[in-house]
Image (cartoon, rainbow, N blue to C red):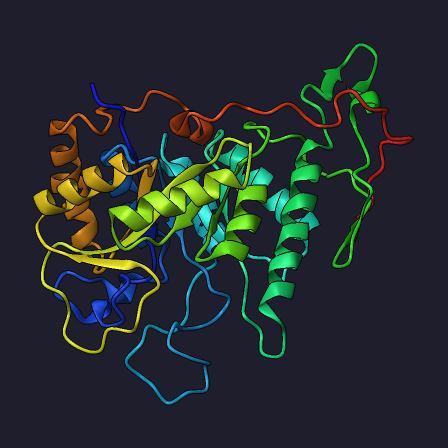
Length: 364
Protein backbone atom coordinates (compact mmCIF):
# COMPACT_ATOMS: atom_id res chain seq x y z
CA UNK A 1 0.00 0.00 0.00
CA UNK A 2 1.24 3.52 -0.81
CA UNK A 3 2.12 5.54 2.27
CA UNK A 4 -1.01 7.37 3.31
CA UNK A 5 -1.61 11.06 3.70
CA UNK A 6 -3.07 12.97 6.62
CA UNK A 7 -6.28 14.94 6.30
CA UNK A 8 -7.85 17.73 8.35
CA UNK A 9 -10.59 20.29 7.84
CA UNK A 10 -10.70 23.93 8.92
CA UNK A 11 -14.06 24.96 10.36
CA UNK A 12 -15.02 28.62 10.16
CA UNK A 13 -18.56 29.97 10.64
CA UNK A 14 -20.72 28.87 7.68
CA UNK A 15 -17.71 28.21 5.43
CA UNK A 16 -14.80 30.06 3.87
CA UNK A 17 -16.90 31.91 1.32
CA UNK A 18 -18.29 35.12 2.88
CA UNK A 19 -21.70 34.41 1.36
CA UNK A 20 -21.86 30.78 2.51
CA UNK A 21 -24.36 31.58 5.26
CA UNK A 22 -26.99 32.41 2.61
CA UNK A 23 -26.67 29.08 0.77
CA UNK A 24 -29.39 26.38 0.84
CA UNK A 25 -28.53 23.93 3.59
CA UNK A 26 -26.55 26.46 5.62
CA UNK A 27 -27.54 26.90 9.26
CA UNK A 28 -26.95 30.58 10.06
CA UNK A 29 -29.41 30.59 12.96
CA UNK A 30 -27.34 27.88 14.67
CA UNK A 31 -23.82 29.32 14.35
CA UNK A 32 -23.80 30.31 18.01
CA UNK A 33 -24.99 26.91 19.27
CA UNK A 34 -22.94 23.99 20.54
CA UNK A 35 -25.00 21.59 18.46
CA UNK A 36 -23.89 23.15 15.17
CA UNK A 37 -20.19 22.68 15.92
CA UNK A 38 -20.70 19.23 17.39
CA UNK A 39 -22.44 18.10 14.20
CA UNK A 40 -19.60 19.39 12.02
CA UNK A 41 -16.89 17.69 14.07
CA UNK A 42 -18.83 14.44 14.19
CA UNK A 43 -19.11 14.47 10.41
CA UNK A 44 -15.33 14.89 10.19
CA UNK A 45 -14.80 12.07 12.68
CA UNK A 46 -17.08 9.82 10.64
CA UNK A 47 -14.58 10.24 7.80
CA UNK A 48 -11.70 9.25 10.13
CA UNK A 49 -9.99 12.60 9.59
CA UNK A 50 -6.90 13.34 11.69
CA UNK A 51 -8.20 16.56 13.20
CA UNK A 52 -10.29 19.68 12.79
CA UNK A 53 -9.10 23.23 13.34
CA UNK A 54 -11.57 25.76 14.70
CA UNK A 55 -10.96 29.34 13.59
CA UNK A 56 -10.89 32.29 15.98
CA UNK A 57 -9.54 35.63 14.74
CA UNK A 58 -10.10 37.69 17.86
CA UNK A 59 -12.39 39.87 15.71
CA UNK A 60 -16.10 39.89 14.98
CA UNK A 61 -15.82 39.36 11.21
CA UNK A 62 -13.25 38.60 8.50
CA UNK A 63 -14.10 41.58 6.33
CA UNK A 64 -13.05 44.49 8.51
CA UNK A 65 -13.49 46.17 11.89
CA UNK A 66 -16.82 45.86 13.70
CA UNK A 67 -17.72 49.47 12.98
CA UNK A 68 -17.59 49.16 9.17
CA UNK A 69 -20.82 49.44 7.20
CA UNK A 70 -21.00 45.95 5.70
CA UNK A 71 -24.02 43.96 6.76
CA UNK A 72 -23.54 40.90 4.52
CA UNK A 73 -20.89 39.14 6.63
CA UNK A 74 -21.30 36.77 9.56
CA UNK A 75 -20.88 38.84 12.72
CA UNK A 76 -20.03 37.46 16.13
CA UNK A 77 -18.47 34.13 16.98
CA UNK A 78 -17.95 31.68 19.81
CA UNK A 79 -14.56 31.11 21.41
CA UNK A 80 -12.73 28.34 19.54
CA UNK A 81 -11.10 26.76 22.57
CA UNK A 82 -14.39 26.59 24.44
CA UNK A 83 -16.07 25.03 21.38
CA UNK A 84 -13.38 22.35 21.39
CA UNK A 85 -13.91 21.70 25.11
CA UNK A 86 -17.65 21.29 24.53
CA UNK A 87 -17.18 18.94 21.59
CA UNK A 88 -14.45 16.84 23.23
CA UNK A 89 -16.63 14.55 25.39
CA UNK A 90 -19.06 14.09 22.49
CA UNK A 91 -16.39 12.67 20.17
CA UNK A 92 -13.91 9.84 20.63
CA UNK A 93 -10.99 9.91 18.19
CA UNK A 94 -10.66 13.05 16.09
CA UNK A 95 -8.11 15.68 17.08
CA UNK A 96 -9.38 19.09 18.21
CA UNK A 97 -7.16 22.05 17.32
CA UNK A 98 -8.63 25.45 18.24
CA UNK A 99 -6.99 28.68 17.14
CA UNK A 100 -5.74 30.75 20.08
CA UNK A 101 -4.36 34.23 19.43
CA UNK A 102 -1.03 34.90 21.15
CA UNK A 103 -1.20 38.68 20.78
CA UNK A 104 -3.80 39.28 23.49
CA UNK A 105 -3.36 36.26 25.78
CA UNK A 106 -1.01 35.19 28.54
CA UNK A 107 0.95 31.96 28.02
CA UNK A 108 0.36 30.76 31.58
CA UNK A 109 -3.40 30.78 31.04
CA UNK A 110 -3.18 29.34 27.51
CA UNK A 111 -1.02 26.47 28.77
CA UNK A 112 -3.54 25.45 31.43
CA UNK A 113 -6.51 25.80 29.08
CA UNK A 114 -4.93 23.61 26.40
CA UNK A 115 -3.69 21.09 28.97
CA UNK A 116 -7.24 20.91 30.29
CA UNK A 117 -8.55 20.32 26.76
CA UNK A 118 -6.05 17.48 26.42
CA UNK A 119 -7.44 15.92 29.60
CA UNK A 120 -11.07 16.43 28.59
CA UNK A 121 -10.42 14.92 25.14
CA UNK A 122 -8.19 12.12 26.48
CA UNK A 123 -5.17 13.15 24.46
CA UNK A 124 -6.65 14.74 21.33
CA UNK A 125 -5.82 18.43 21.86
CA UNK A 126 -3.83 20.75 19.67
CA UNK A 127 -3.27 24.47 19.29
CA UNK A 128 -3.18 26.55 16.14
CA UNK A 129 -0.98 29.48 17.05
CA UNK A 130 -2.28 32.75 15.63
CA UNK A 131 -1.25 36.39 15.80
CA UNK A 132 -3.50 39.44 15.54
CA UNK A 133 -2.09 42.07 13.22
CA UNK A 134 -2.61 45.00 15.54
CA UNK A 135 -2.35 48.47 14.07
CA UNK A 136 0.95 50.07 14.98
CA UNK A 137 2.78 46.82 15.70
CA UNK A 138 5.44 45.35 13.44
CA UNK A 139 4.66 41.86 12.13
CA UNK A 140 8.17 40.67 12.94
CA UNK A 141 7.63 41.74 16.55
CA UNK A 142 4.30 39.90 16.67
CA UNK A 143 5.96 36.74 15.35
CA UNK A 144 8.78 37.07 17.90
CA UNK A 145 6.18 37.46 20.65
CA UNK A 146 4.39 34.33 19.38
CA UNK A 147 7.67 32.40 19.45
CA UNK A 148 8.20 33.36 23.11
CA UNK A 149 4.57 32.51 23.85
CA UNK A 150 4.95 29.00 22.42
CA UNK A 151 8.22 28.43 24.27
CA UNK A 152 6.65 29.40 27.61
CA UNK A 153 3.59 27.21 27.03
CA UNK A 154 5.76 24.23 26.12
CA UNK A 155 7.93 24.71 29.21
CA UNK A 156 4.84 24.91 31.42
CA UNK A 157 3.48 21.67 29.97
CA UNK A 158 6.78 20.05 30.97
CA UNK A 159 6.95 21.64 34.43
CA UNK A 160 5.15 18.67 35.96
CA UNK A 161 6.94 15.42 35.24
CA UNK A 162 4.87 12.38 34.36
CA UNK A 163 3.69 10.72 37.55
CA UNK A 164 4.06 13.81 39.72
CA UNK A 165 0.59 13.18 41.21
CA UNK A 166 1.18 10.15 43.44
CA UNK A 167 -2.07 10.33 45.48
CA UNK A 168 -0.62 8.28 48.34
CA UNK A 169 -3.38 8.13 50.95
CA UNK A 170 -1.24 6.20 53.45
CA UNK A 171 1.41 8.95 53.67
CA UNK A 172 -0.90 11.86 52.91
CA UNK A 173 1.17 12.91 49.87
CA UNK A 174 -0.88 13.85 46.82
CA UNK A 175 2.03 15.26 44.81
CA UNK A 176 5.70 14.38 44.54
CA UNK A 177 7.39 17.80 44.88
CA UNK A 178 10.59 16.35 43.42
CA UNK A 179 8.80 16.16 40.07
CA UNK A 180 7.62 19.78 39.88
CA UNK A 181 9.89 22.35 38.29
CA UNK A 182 10.21 26.09 37.80
CA UNK A 183 10.40 27.13 34.16
CA UNK A 184 12.14 30.45 34.93
CA UNK A 185 11.50 32.04 31.55
CA UNK A 186 12.57 35.67 31.20
CA UNK A 187 12.31 37.19 27.74
CA UNK A 188 11.46 40.45 26.01
CA UNK A 189 7.74 39.69 25.95
CA UNK A 190 7.08 37.45 28.97
CA UNK A 191 8.52 36.59 32.35
CA UNK A 192 7.11 33.39 33.85
CA UNK A 193 8.38 31.46 36.86
CA UNK A 194 5.99 28.50 36.93
CA UNK A 195 5.36 25.68 37.47
CA UNK A 196 1.94 25.20 35.89
CA UNK A 197 -1.15 24.63 38.00
CA UNK A 198 -2.19 21.76 35.70
CA UNK A 199 -0.35 18.41 35.68
CA UNK A 200 1.42 17.31 32.50
CA UNK A 201 -1.12 16.71 29.68
CA UNK A 202 -1.89 13.16 28.50
CA UNK A 203 0.09 13.74 25.27
CA UNK A 204 2.96 15.29 27.21
CA UNK A 205 2.87 18.11 24.70
CA UNK A 206 -0.39 18.76 22.81
CA UNK A 207 0.18 19.31 19.10
CA UNK A 208 1.23 22.86 18.14
CA UNK A 209 0.32 24.00 14.61
CA UNK A 210 1.05 27.20 12.72
CA UNK A 211 0.16 28.69 9.33
CA UNK A 212 3.19 30.01 7.44
CA UNK A 213 3.45 31.91 4.14
CA UNK A 214 7.11 32.89 3.86
CA UNK A 215 10.65 32.40 5.10
CA UNK A 216 10.40 34.34 8.36
CA UNK A 217 7.27 32.52 9.46
CA UNK A 218 8.65 29.21 8.15
CA UNK A 219 11.51 29.70 10.62
CA UNK A 220 9.09 30.36 13.48
CA UNK A 221 6.91 27.37 12.58
CA UNK A 222 9.85 25.01 12.04
CA UNK A 223 11.27 25.96 15.45
CA UNK A 224 8.09 25.74 17.50
CA UNK A 225 5.38 23.77 15.69
CA UNK A 226 4.64 20.08 15.18
CA UNK A 227 2.38 20.77 12.17
CA UNK A 228 3.08 23.52 9.64
CA UNK A 229 0.29 24.68 7.33
CA UNK A 230 1.64 26.06 4.05
CA UNK A 231 0.00 27.52 0.95
CA UNK A 232 1.52 26.13 -2.27
CA UNK A 233 -0.15 26.69 -5.63
CA UNK A 234 0.89 23.46 -7.33
CA UNK A 235 3.10 20.39 -7.00
CA UNK A 236 6.30 22.26 -7.85
CA UNK A 237 5.79 24.92 -5.18
CA UNK A 238 4.65 22.20 -2.74
CA UNK A 239 7.94 20.38 -3.30
CA UNK A 240 10.00 23.55 -2.86
CA UNK A 241 8.15 24.73 0.26
CA UNK A 242 8.29 21.31 1.94
CA UNK A 243 12.04 21.11 1.31
CA UNK A 244 12.59 24.64 2.64
CA UNK A 245 10.66 24.03 5.87
CA UNK A 246 12.35 20.68 6.53
CA UNK A 247 15.78 22.23 5.99
CA UNK A 248 15.09 24.66 8.83
CA UNK A 249 14.71 22.04 11.57
CA UNK A 250 15.94 18.68 12.76
CA UNK A 251 12.67 18.13 14.64
CA UNK A 252 9.96 15.85 13.23
CA UNK A 253 7.33 18.16 11.70
CA UNK A 254 4.33 17.41 9.52
CA UNK A 255 3.73 19.72 6.56
CA UNK A 256 0.12 20.25 5.46
CA UNK A 257 -1.03 22.26 2.46
CA UNK A 258 -4.07 24.50 2.93
CA UNK A 259 -6.71 24.37 0.19
CA UNK A 260 -10.07 26.13 -0.06
CA UNK A 261 -12.45 23.66 -1.65
CA UNK A 262 -15.76 24.01 -3.47
CA UNK A 263 -17.17 20.60 -4.34
CA UNK A 264 -20.57 21.94 -5.25
CA UNK A 265 -21.77 25.31 -6.49
CA UNK A 266 -19.67 28.26 -5.40
CA UNK A 267 -21.87 30.94 -3.81
CA UNK A 268 -22.59 34.11 -5.71
CA UNK A 269 -20.98 37.33 -4.64
CA UNK A 270 -17.54 38.74 -4.07
CA UNK A 271 -14.79 36.26 -3.23
CA UNK A 272 -11.97 37.96 -1.25
CA UNK A 273 -8.42 37.31 -2.27
CA UNK A 274 -7.21 34.21 -0.47
CA UNK A 275 -3.90 33.16 1.01
CA UNK A 276 -4.54 29.56 -0.10
CA UNK A 277 -5.07 27.86 -3.45
CA UNK A 278 -8.76 27.50 -4.32
CA UNK A 279 -10.03 24.24 -5.79
CA UNK A 280 -13.32 23.94 -7.67
CA UNK A 281 -14.32 20.61 -9.20
CA UNK A 282 -15.39 17.06 -8.48
CA UNK A 283 -14.38 14.92 -5.51
CA UNK A 284 -12.44 12.65 -7.85
CA UNK A 285 -10.51 15.60 -9.26
CA UNK A 286 -9.68 16.75 -5.73
CA UNK A 287 -8.48 13.25 -4.79
CA UNK A 288 -6.19 13.31 -7.85
CA UNK A 289 -4.80 16.71 -6.85
CA UNK A 290 -4.16 15.57 -3.27
CA UNK A 291 -2.38 12.46 -4.51
CA UNK A 292 -0.16 14.51 -6.84
CA UNK A 293 0.77 17.09 -4.19
CA UNK A 294 1.33 14.36 -1.59
CA UNK A 295 3.81 12.70 -3.95
CA UNK A 296 5.61 16.05 -4.15
CA UNK A 297 6.52 15.84 -0.46
CA UNK A 298 3.54 16.99 1.60
CA UNK A 299 2.45 14.95 4.61
CA UNK A 300 -1.16 16.03 4.49
CA UNK A 301 -3.78 18.64 3.77
CA UNK A 302 -6.01 21.01 5.67
CA UNK A 303 -9.11 21.50 3.57
CA UNK A 304 -11.13 24.67 4.10
CA UNK A 305 -14.74 23.91 3.06
CA UNK A 306 -16.17 26.81 1.08
CA UNK A 307 -19.71 26.10 2.26
CA UNK A 308 -20.70 24.33 5.47
CA UNK A 309 -21.95 21.74 5.93
CA UNK A 310 -22.26 20.87 2.20
CA UNK A 311 -18.57 20.80 1.26
CA UNK A 312 -17.62 19.04 4.50
CA UNK A 313 -20.15 16.30 3.76
CA UNK A 314 -18.74 15.89 0.27
CA UNK A 315 -15.20 15.64 1.67
CA UNK A 316 -16.29 12.87 4.04
CA UNK A 317 -18.68 10.99 1.74
CA UNK A 318 -16.94 11.42 -1.63
CA UNK A 319 -13.32 12.58 -1.34
CA UNK A 320 -12.30 10.23 1.48
CA UNK A 321 -13.61 7.10 -0.33
CA UNK A 322 -11.78 8.23 -3.49
CA UNK A 323 -8.55 8.52 -1.49
CA UNK A 324 -9.11 5.08 0.02
CA UNK A 325 -9.55 3.61 -3.46
CA UNK A 326 -6.09 5.02 -4.25
CA UNK A 327 -4.63 3.46 -1.09
CA UNK A 328 -3.95 6.88 0.42
CA UNK A 329 -6.16 7.14 3.50
CA UNK A 330 -7.04 5.07 6.55
CA UNK A 331 -10.27 3.13 6.87
CA UNK A 332 -10.21 3.18 10.69
CA UNK A 333 -8.42 5.09 13.40
CA UNK A 334 -5.32 3.25 14.55
CA UNK A 335 -4.49 5.42 17.57
CA UNK A 336 -6.32 7.11 20.40
CA UNK A 337 -4.40 10.40 20.52
CA UNK A 338 -3.72 13.18 18.04
CA UNK A 339 0.00 12.50 18.29
CA UNK A 340 -0.77 8.90 17.46
CA UNK A 341 -2.79 9.85 14.36
CA UNK A 342 0.14 11.92 13.11
CA UNK A 343 2.80 9.36 13.94
CA UNK A 344 4.55 11.68 16.40
CA UNK A 345 6.08 10.27 19.57
CA UNK A 346 5.10 11.42 23.03
CA UNK A 347 8.03 13.55 24.28
CA UNK A 348 9.58 13.29 27.72
CA UNK A 349 9.58 16.32 30.02
CA UNK A 350 12.66 18.46 29.49
CA UNK A 351 12.91 18.89 33.27
CA UNK A 352 12.86 15.20 34.20
CA UNK A 353 16.59 15.16 34.95
CA UNK A 354 16.78 18.57 36.65
CA UNK A 355 16.22 19.57 40.24
CA UNK A 356 12.80 20.04 41.88
CA UNK A 357 11.03 23.23 42.86
CA UNK A 358 11.61 24.41 46.40
CA UNK A 359 7.93 24.25 47.31
CA UNK A 360 4.68 22.97 45.90
CA UNK A 361 3.42 26.51 45.35
CA UNK A 362 3.09 28.08 41.93
CA UNK A 363 3.82 31.47 40.51
CA UNK A 364 3.22 33.09 37.17
